[in-house]
Length: 187
Image (tube, rainbow, N blue to C red; front, side, top):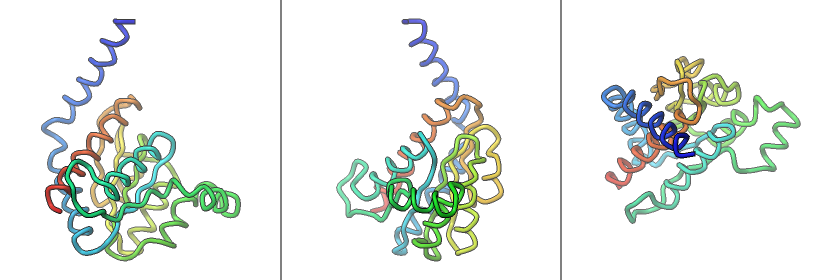
């Protein structure tokens, strides 16, 4: 058991070491996009599947509640939480449309769509980002591996250079928390 714990910690350390010195500029770009949108009165819409859905909800909660600093609530909406919308859209249009249909309904020009996918190829996330761009939204991706199809539909794609899904997800929440700290610093 101790060896498993040590191996998991070591794997995490190797992954975080691989992004140090390479991700700072992209995280700064993503943070600027998000801060500028929020300062302009726009909102952040987030989507993902499975663990990435949980991350979308987590980041949205950091915006509407608070991260660490007392500040006014900021408009962050996880498109993963409305079971009636998800099941109705999934039933009527197919699961690939559960996020883009909500983007069509809720997004305005200048909003930010954050798509989270460890592979970068989740069809419903890619579709939401693509529609967001067509509507004049800024798009930010949190991905892994090589960034997948999301490379083509994101203004900035934060790609964790790993094939290890748990490590990718750990970096995604670190990226999200780092962006939330930058948001707190600006509000």
